[in-house]
Image (cartoon, rainbow, N blue to C red; front, side):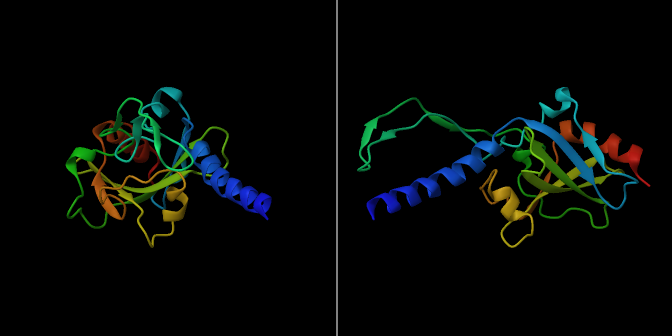
Length: 183
């Protein structure tokens, strides 16, 4: 019975770890789709992709923390752990947008890593051409895309389930692409 329990526990630990490791790869493709586009947009230029990594921004921790024994006691402490405050396609410092304009064209942005055929993270994007502002919605609990994103990244801080401002860098890339392919 002990072997069965050990094998089951190993599988339960390995499965989320393999999903998490899969999601940690470098962004290899970003697609933009929506009814306002005559065709989906696919971004594969490494110089652009390197600016918009899926695992970036709040919720991403760096450094190393304590090392634990099986009984939970700390064996060794290593370095400091710090959380990112910038990255991805969002201007995190602006916080949650209380209201954003209604009626903007609505797009789905999908992020792929490595050789994955399936997106590892998906958000919604809207851009206001009259102001130049862009908005990104991070799906939250109850949204269809939340389970997809939950295996790759959880930003926390109350961001999931809300609209946030798109970063200027994302706006400079996405807005012209969308305008070029818009119907």
